[in-house]
Length: 185
Image (cartoon, rainbow, N blue to C red; front, side, top):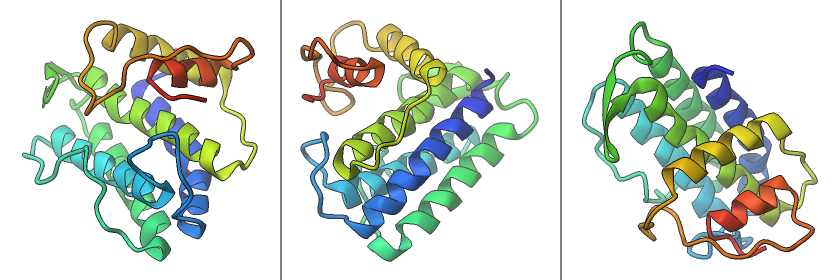
């Protein structure tokens, strides 16, 4: 699966969750610092931040912030931000080139995995809050899990990802990934 296809699939997975967050923004998520509306706004901000990186422009915001976006604007802001990142990453030479990423200079394809994992995992966080019953595809979950276990194998910055917790014995693959990323489920 190519990096842009993975990002598109992560965004597709998140879209219904962002819509549900817009309808019920105050519901608590597994991200204890953010309710559903704030978490959806964070996803938008992260997509925008990474669009700037992929475009070679200095970002003007932090990807760790949750901007104040009115609930009735969340879904459209999400769609616009997702389309913007896909367009920026699809520009000729971006994936093959180098991106000056906060985690260090890296190939564009590797840099694109950060917003892909972030969007996908936060879609799951919103699913936990929204309880819509959406399935998370096994192939995509395995790819995101492999990326996360590679990137977050050492000491963790709590602003980026929490320390792992034990997953319940009956946890599905997303539940196990969530636990690896510090979500108590």
